[in-house]
Length: 303
Ligand code: SF4
Image (cartoon, rainbow, N blue to C red):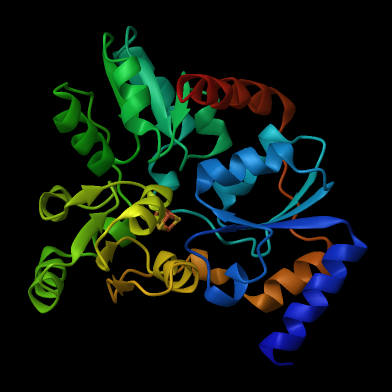
């Protein structure tokens, strides 16, 4: 079956089941085209809560579907591929957070949204790349442990002039697959292009950037900027969206920046997901209650 036919079948089933399709910015272009809403983790978590549809097909990775299940417990949340996880999220476990809390009893623990529900249940507040600086700043009168992304922590600490308890963890796409030499080569080849980098990139790469921001911030910047050329230092799926939605401007991706876990979601897996109602993501009650508290605190502090 060609892509067009599969997309049609998906849209028919979506209607039949009164489902909504939420899609992360790093998904394949043919999945992005199906989206009722396309966005970053924070946008999608908020959408999951507000949408009237009882079924949500979450085209992203596991922790995102868990956040939707926590915020919208009355809905059925489907993750098309059961192995679509996030190696960065795997850098923190609830046991390790509990141990760290014993070692730093006075610290406030802030978890990046890229963590499991079980980890969110052990911390005080969650944040995303879009609101990390604001939330960390608001809590900076206390000792802070920020987990699990060491690059985002280093960026925030430098920007705010504070120190944080270190946590070893990184996204392999932003930390390993995006290297300084490639960014510098692209800058040489595209003089005058604005370099927009995600704060999960390494400190050396972030030093070369004109703008450091999350994926939604990059889209806003590309729309409002007078510049026409941008080097987009994040997963390449975002560039597909920018090229489609912001015609007339040029977006240069990092060729190697591909998240294999995000790309596990294909049209076939979305079709199966709606056909067989798979894979249902739910979070056990006590964990969901505690994780919800940390997510609600994020929503309050990011106002
Ligand atoms: S791009 Fe990095 S942080 Fe995002 S899902 Fe992939 S591994 Fe996780």
